[in-house]
Image 1 (cartoon, rainbow, N blue to C red):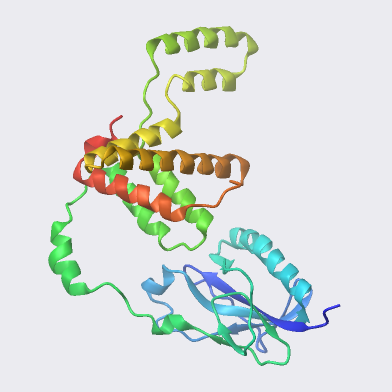
Image 2: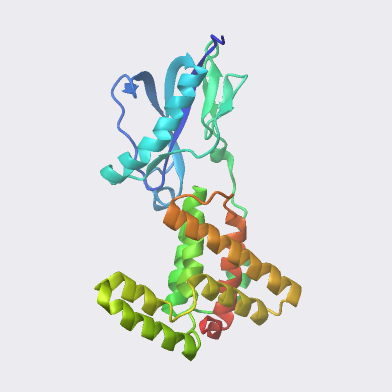
Length: 300
């Protein structure tokens, strides 16, 4: 039986400056286990920039415990802290990375980590050394000039949501935000008149059941599905951008797959598949850039 014990380092993320006030000695009991709430000094903690991005300022460091106990604690924190954040109206969560085991005292602070008991935990924070990849001169003097102004409210709202999704790091949240953009821009088409007539007849027959939901569902079927609307939107965007048939088929197939995953997440709470966040962002970028140049692609 493995009797090794580990310090458990749990980084706490926030997106708008919801710092926790630690007790004077920093000691705290979490889920029945002793821990310390550590904080680090960051420049301009009250600035709008830091308040709008994901930051790890604080972390819990649990006293040495067995491996399986540490993993159970981390699992419970990930299940309970979202409820805590909701009820306290706070933007607080555990970093999403998988639990790491460090052989050294120095380890990556943004990642939940186990550190052997005989070491003194010393988290390293690389974010203070990060520099921007955006150069202001070409950005404002050249690229900005080439950006057309957008006044269409639907396109503006979609752009704002896409930008907001970049402040998030939780794959599920980002994925759902991106698919919501596609869904909001995709117009559903009317089904053929013969189908609509048949649905009208069935709605009349359904009236005897006195079920408003059934009548509403039948009326809703007079339009094509949301998934079909998203595929159509992606296809129009591809053609407006001059894509060849192979690329059109590839992107519309991706749209079908991603919308099915989105439906599973929205209705069943799980997709059973890996979330293709990059694929979703590719489609959103394609649709938005095409719509900015030619808003008529939004028309079914």
